[in-house]
Length: 88
Image 1: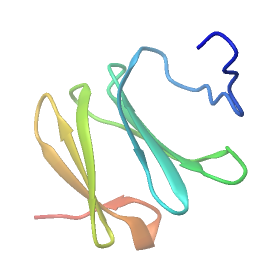
Image 2 (image 1 turned 180 degrees about the vertical axis):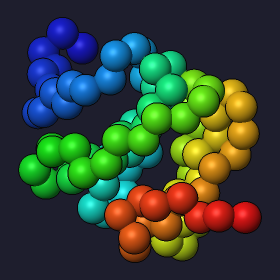
Image 3 (image 1 turned 180 degrees about the horizontal axis):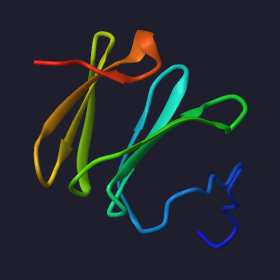
């Protein structure tokens, strides 16, 4: 529809988005620029920006863990610890 207008526009990636995930508190975006960014859903400010070795293909939250599938690996991040990596 031509009459639809965005409520908010969030900018921050250097390339096209590949995946987007919304939770109660966050918008999480993954991009071909090899980063995923975590945004506060209320303020639209970046809370975390993480660079990976490959482009971000998919995002999934299970409990308090953010799983990020990139073109090089599967990564896990602790959402309760400012999205720090969970070591193997």
